[in-house]
Amino acid sequence: MLRIHAGAEMIMVQYKGNAPALNALMGGEVNLLFDVVDIAQGQMKSGRVRAIASTNPRRGIGPFGELPVLAETIPDFELVTWHGVMVPAATPGEVVVRLNREIQAVLGEPDIRQRFADGGLEITGGTPEAFAAILKRDHAKYGRILTQAGIKPE
Image (cartoon, rainbow, N blue to C red; front, side, top):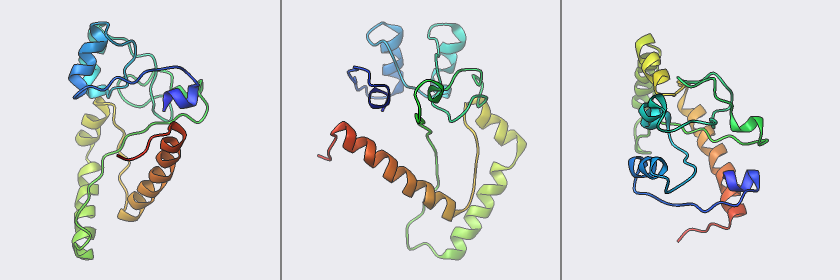
């Protein structure tokens, strides 16, 4: 995604997880790594790796909120990961409503919000309909990027 938006020449190196990729960065095997804050936070604080930018939509999110965001120098660049709760399609509507209500209550608790923020995550919460809209939007967005990159399903 960065290669496409920035027009930069890059070779993607795949690793079996974040830890081996982070070790490769610290060992000089790779020059750049996209990683999540909660995984790399210890190495960032110790100075073993240096964060240079965030993929968040704006500054101020998480423990390294002072970092510039890539969209400041690469227009329209935004790579926001999300976590969602899904259930089988046949789940009764009243169960979905209750589950969502309980999840929203937990996500509203200050200590939970702080724990997420400490890991670089911003809680948005919402309705099942809002989550469905996010899935639809991201499917279209990343579908275009995959097409631009020439990536096809195998």
